[in-house]
Each structure stands twice: as C-alpha cells, then as structure tokens.
Image 1: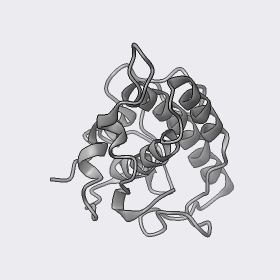
Image 2: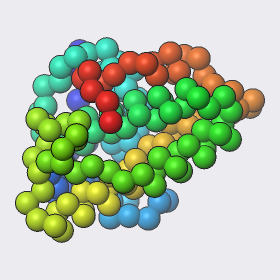
Image 3: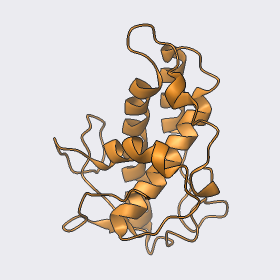
Image 4: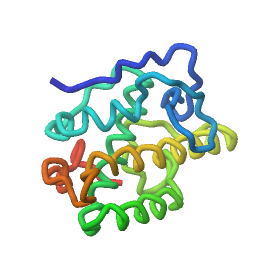
Length: 171
C-alpha cells in the first residue's frame, strides 16, 4: 500500500502543481505555520514504506508535495552516508539547504512528468522559496531520526534505506 498525504490541500496556494502546505517550522519562509502534523512529518514517516514502490498514484496537489519531499529525504540520506557523526551531518544539512533547487521544467529536473513548469516568475520564486524552507526543516528533523540522541552515531535501521531510490529517481 502506497501512503498518500493526509493533509488536505483545500485553502492552500499551489505552485507548479504542488500544494504549499503549512509547516511546523522555525525557519523563515513563505509556508503558513501550524502546530499539527505537517507534510514534513509525513514524508519522514512514510519514507521507508514508500521507497519500496516503483510507482505512485498521485491523488492531488498535496501528494505532489509529498513526492518531492520523499526525494529530498533520499537525497539527505545519501549525503548522510558519509557522515559518521551527528555534527558532520548537521553541517551537511545546512550545506544542502543552501544549494539551489532546479525548477520543474528545467533540464535535469527529476520529476518532469509529475510537476508542470511555472507559469510566471513569481510562481517559480514562490515554489523555490517554499521548498527551500521545507527542505531545510526536513533535513533537521531527519537528522534526529538518522542519528541517535545520546551518542550521535548513525541509526542503522534508518541508514539501511540510504541506497534506495523513491520512484527509481534521485535529486
């Protein structure tokens, strides 16, 4: 069973077909704030189950947001492989958060068939700003899952999924 986003996209703005869902974050950005379960929690929680599937039936804009964040989880975990301590991985999270994001429609964008190209420059900037904020928050929360709290070493049960690709794609 593929897990779909349970967060409704009604009332949320969209960009490139993705829902700009509320985030529980302290990072600055355009995402509306929430104190409840958010799409970042879903992406991390469903990653180990969803990564086992090669197809995904998209049921709405919130699923497209979840798909992109699942690919980001895979990107972070691949980078975490070379980081033996939590301190090294923390530096990696911040370095990856500063890397520029390709937009849907750009050559080399991993989800060309799922997301449409932005219709305007403001939509492109909105998409980029939202996912920069979401990716940064995702990396910080994933860090807590992939490394133990007390010793700061890698959690082997999470890192076992580092070589898996979601939808056989990679950012």
